[in-house]
Image (cartoon, rainbow, N blue to C red):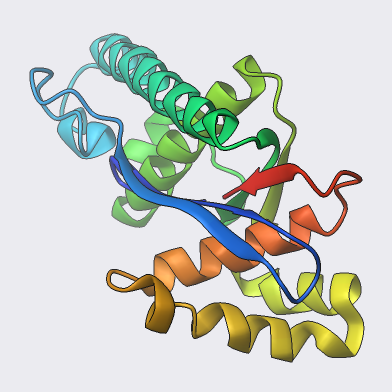
Length: 200
């Protein structure tokens, strides 16, 4: 899964190494437009008193978490209808350092962007955990190294194959979907059952 402010690119795959199959791909939105500033919650609270900011962020987190859970439950049900079980997940992470406390975040624009990315990744992570689906976090910049450790010399060929899937799948097959599928293939390689699907 590749996550952005308010949404994530979900790709579910199955199959053996080098013959992965995309089962499902979807853009999942996890914001409630009725909640002011829900798409960029840290930007919205930047000028609020700290307790008010914390309250608003908690409200947004609760709603986004519920929406993520509902969407992923639907994804899981669709996979089950096709005879697959969602048994593992991968979420692409940023390369940023751990975040400081809220006051320091709101005082630095760059940290606000970082915090929002983490905010929505956490919503999806919590949803997977609620579903009892193990989650592997892979930093985007480490994707190549992770693939090399998992696939060895086959890694470039597997990545090239996944990148080229758009020719048969049709549009959209964006960078988000390609990297999500590649991350999922790394996690899938550790799955024991050929009938298990990995979602990213």
